[in-house]
Structure formats: C-alpha cells, structure tokens
Image (tube, rainbow, N blue to C red; front, side):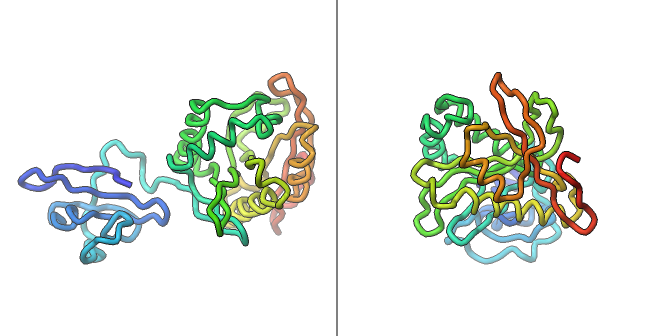
Length: 267
C-alpha cells in the first residue's frame, strides 16, 4: 500500500514508502532503499524492505535513525483491524477487492429484511466500506470481512461500531456488535463462530485495561430469531425495547466478566 512518494534526493527522485498495517511495520521500496541516506524515518515499529513483494533486495533493518515523512497522514500508528482466525474462518480488514462480494450480499432482500428493510445500492455499500475503514482509523474498532479459511469464499461481515443511534435508552459510546452473512452460509454456525472471535479480541483488550470494552451492546428486530439465538449464545441479554426508525427493536448487552467487574444486566 503506497503511502507517500516525496522528492528527498538531490536530483528530485521520489522516495516511496509503504505502511504495512497488518503488523505495524514501515516498509521501504527499492527506490527508498537506494536513497536511504536522504530519509529521516521515525516509526515505532520495525523496518523491512518491500511492500509485500518478493523482488526486494537487501534489508534496511539497520536504518533506525531515519524518519519517514508522511504528508497529510493521520497520527501514527494508524489503528487497523487485526487478522483473526477460527477453526473454519478468517477475519481481516476490508479492502476495495471485497466490494463486489459485499455489494452482492447487501443487495439481497433476504439479507436486509431485518437490517433497513430494503436492499442497498452499490453506492450505499461503497459508502459502508469507507465507513468501516474510517471507524478503524478514528476509533480503533470496526468490522471485519469474513471468509471460509479453506476456500476463501466470502461469508459476510462482523464487527463493532459506534453509530450514535437515536435510541432511548441510548447506547452512548458502548461498542455495538453486528453481523451479517450471505444466505448461502446460513445454518453452518458461521455467525456464532465469527462473533465469538471478535468478542475474544474485545475481551483481550478489556483485560489490558481498555474499559470501553467492559460492556458491548447490540440491537435486533424481534422477528429475527436466528440472530437472537446468536446473541444469546454469545452471552447477550435483553435489557430494553425501543423504537428505531419507526420499528420496534430489542436492545441487548453483554458485560465482560472479570475479577474486577461483575455487573448485572442493565447496569
């Protein structure tokens, strides 16, 4: 992923740098390596010498004293979705290559029956994918794309949001979990498997002192029995009923149980 190309050499040749968001490293291309004396690299992570390609030459692990210039970028490091694996699934951050799969899923009336009540256009799905990326960058949470581990077939999406919904009682800043699966994958337990994976990730962050993960919430239409079962299996309990966009919805919560925290539902 090309982040910046800035002329840093005497002859004006650009020095290209890449940020590998999968593990927090800064990566320099061959051109950057060739002109390394003109770099000033400041980054908390380790260095490597290519952008995921196999044609790199040499290593620049020793170039610790330089700092890369990222013009117009967000403060580093940029939060990103960690790769998660289960027995049958892989969960990773969305890319533009996931757009067609996601658009096909969100345009299916069976999928959107309880989520908005109508199919979504490609324009709306594209905006959704951009929102996913923005959520990770701004909030350090978001959605993962879910695929079968063996076949890499698109399964769906699962993750967390902070959507500032107009609800009474409000969710506030509690992370809201959600999941949506392509119809072909229903009935295989993939929803529960994906939800368990992201909750394990959230619980680990809670254990590291991130108190925002002490309580997570979700909202489900009363007639969406399969999703209610998934929520119950994951430890969510109903704490209120509300109207949202003129439709009744059930509000659920899950409280992370630790030695320091053991609150009853609704607290």
